[in-house]
Image 1 (cartoon, rainbow, N blue to C red):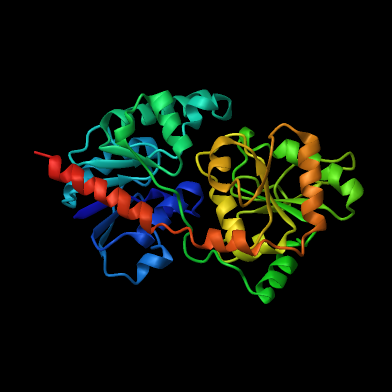
Image 2 (image 1 turned 60 degrees about the vertical axis):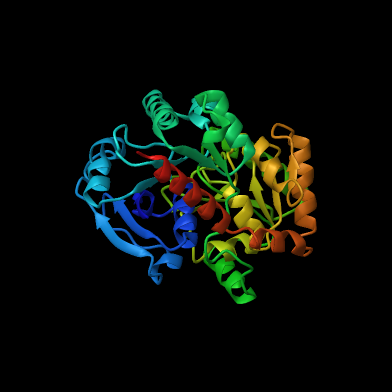
Length: 368
């Protein structure tokens, strides 16, 4: 099979969707892969040395908005490279494409959490999702919760959903102590640091987390909140939070942390917090656990489904429960959970790659 891949998420620093692309490509069985993007991209570390890559195609149109490029350039590129199928990892697909297409529907946040998106962005994302639900050979996702959301908001039949848990991309494992100390010096974090990694959507509850960490600091001196992720950098190079009365920022703003530093950053902090109200999986939780971190998170449906036995999960709106859980975790910072780290390290992408590939081959066999 020659498989075309919408690889736009590899053009820049990868976040959630980019992680899925990386993981699938690193684990993909031997096929001819054609990566299609708007601009030159670097290959994921696990793919660069593999003979599966047929060709890396970069088409013009980098100046186009992504939505236009997806509808106008991507289908022509798929046809031009002679692909048998298309892998679309980011919620949407071209309306007119002549090959079976697998679409990753990570969640249905544009429907369930409309307040997180502008009117224009929300409308675009909902149109993309509905288009994918109508035209894709199948949708795939990482949890039963995400599949239930696709049925609820998109009306897609259960047999057109492939559910297989996400895994770890290369590099996420227990770091050595020298790397941890190096990262502590570089980013100014320590065992009294509560770390959040991810984007700042309203559902992620960062404002509430900042208040809770401030409350913890009154009884556990030295406690601080650090926020890592693209899109939060303030004027001083740190993420912007709510200023104190003297104009200082009580939150340590790390900006985008490169993958080389992220495992040690997870391990360097006392707690990794994931106060998200709505998720389709929760990859930062898996990554943090694999790196030996203690995780406190919200009891949102998908996070409970995947991590209930491996992280401390508390009600999203319960300030007291959050403050108690963070305090307890900081006080026990030296008592890391080796069993949860081992479980997380065993979660790989191979099963998902094989499941998606098998369904694509079935779709090809059924195509006249």
